Every structure is written in C-alpha cells, then in structure tokens.
Amino acid sequence: MYKSLARIGIVIIGRNEGERLEACLRSVAGQGAAVYVDSGSTDGSVALARSLGVAVVELDTDVPFTAARARNAGLARLLRDHPEAEFVQMVDGDCAVHPEWLSTAIADMADDPRRAVVFGRRRERDPGRNAYHRAIDDEWSVPAGPASACGGDALFRVAALREVGGYNDALIAGEEPEMCLRLRARGWRVWSNGAEMTAHDVAMTHLRQWWHRARRTGFGIAALIALHGKDADRSWMRLQQSALLWSSLMLLAIPGLVLSLVGTGAPLRLLALAPALAVAAQVVRLARSKAAAMGWRGGAQWALLIMIAKLAQARGWLQHRVQQRRGTRATLIEYKA
Image (cartoon, rainbow, N blue to C red; front, side, top):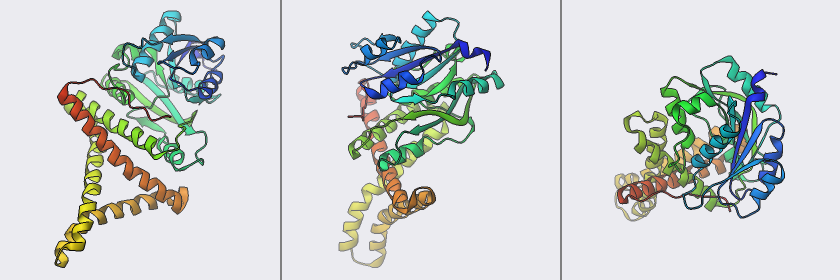
C-alpha cells in the first residue's frame, strides 16, 4: 500500500441526508481523518457524525449555503487539525465510498506528480429503480484517461488546491469544473481511472426533481461562462448552445403544429412542422443510441428526460441572466425532497 495513504483526509458535506449520511460516514471509517460539514440540517446529521467520532463543522446560517463553501470549510478544518495531509477525498454525504477506492486513487496520484485530481466511477445504488436513477447512473459514466473536470466525489492533491485557492464559494453549481479549469491553467492534470469509487443515492421519484436538477445545471453553466468569458471551457459553451437550441425548437413546435393545421399550401405546412419534426428526430436518435444498453423503452425514457433537461437548463440560463442584470445573489437550487 502506498505510504501516503496515512496522509489522507476526507471531507464529507451534507444537508439532511439521514441514512445516506450514515452509510457515507461508515464507508470511510478508519481510512483517514474525516471532517463532516453540515449546511443547516434539521434531521440529526450533526449528532450522528459526532456519535461516530467524526469532526464536525456547522456552517453559519447567516451566509448563503453552497457546496463550494462547505468543501472549503471542511478542507480548512482538516488542514488545521492535520497539517500533514497530502491528499483529501471530497465526497457528498449521499455517497458511500468503495472499500478499495482510496488505495487505488492514491496509487494513481503516485504515477504522476502533476495529477491534481483523480476520480473514478460513481454509480447509482439502484439504477433500476426508475428512469431518473437509470439516466443519472448513465450520466456518471466517464471514460478512463485525461479529463477536463471531475464531479463532487474526487481525490485531490492538497498542494494543488492550495495553489488555486480551493473552490469558488460564490458558485451554487459547477464549482468542480470551474476549479478544474483553474488547475489545468496552472499545469495540473485531472485523471479519470474508471475504478469503482462511490455509490450514490439520488433519491429521485418525481419529474419536478429532475427539472430542478437540470435547471441548476443550466444556471451553473451560465455562471461559469459569465465568470470566465473567453477563457471558459468550450464544453460549457456547447452545453449551453445545445440547451438553447433544442429548447427553442421545442417551444416553436407547439405553435408550429397549430399552424400546420390551419395553414394553406404544402410548403407553409412543412415549414411550420419543421421544429416538431426536428425534435422528434432527435428523440429517436437519442433513444437509438441507448437502446442496446437500456432497451428501446429505457432508451426512449432516457431520450425524453434529456430533452426535458434541455428546457430546464435553458430556464436556468434565463434565471442567471435575470439575476445578473438585477444584481441579486444566487440561492441554492435544491431538487431533493
């Protein structure tokens, strides 16, 4: 086992995660110094963490909560208590860490001293529960090799985090890709090793939750582009452009269908139908791309959820534009019940 495993810390963040938090805390027991950061839970999360011997940071409720702020606070507490820590595993409180993950990730860090981030496969605990869980489990699948960004669960080199000043506290979403952009700008590398990392429980049962989660993504992407301007990652631009394009076509499809019924002349009817036909073709294309893995029914459900997410992301973009013009501060967009 790599010698620096003894110099690893773990920062867990959460808010009202209940049993999911207990599973998370138990999954990292004995694997390193752990700090739990709580963002105003009312379900006994703080008492639970303390009962398991985990150091706790309770965020000041007078300052808006963000995951970035929580992670920075956890890192600060970890390094105050354990200044010798070389690596820190960030993990969301609704995830359980795979038993072999930390030793695997540390070994990958040892292979390249310029790796700032190593992450693996996050999976949904029960992807067969419904279409939402299946779609999100698919979202977590990232090819092994160099990556541009990580998600909420990842192992970080402390020296790299110190160099870039950690996460951006003000971001309510997208804090991980934003920090990875700054890391890569300084010559650090982000690595996906494809190994089993964490089991996540999205606990999603309603379309409303899917909508709010996607709206948060759209808001986060808009914030990242506004923050970095011409230096923004091109993948952010592509995601935003895709959301705006397909949401526009979906919104045009409804009046287009009406016009196709009342219009005179085949050219006019065909023109009116064009947005609806484009959307239908995209749904079929997406469904076909997942049919082998999910079956036709599963692929069709996934495709429809992706298109709904485009609408929600565009709504998030619009929300960001409005708040930016008014000069108001963003607040958390939560999707869990």
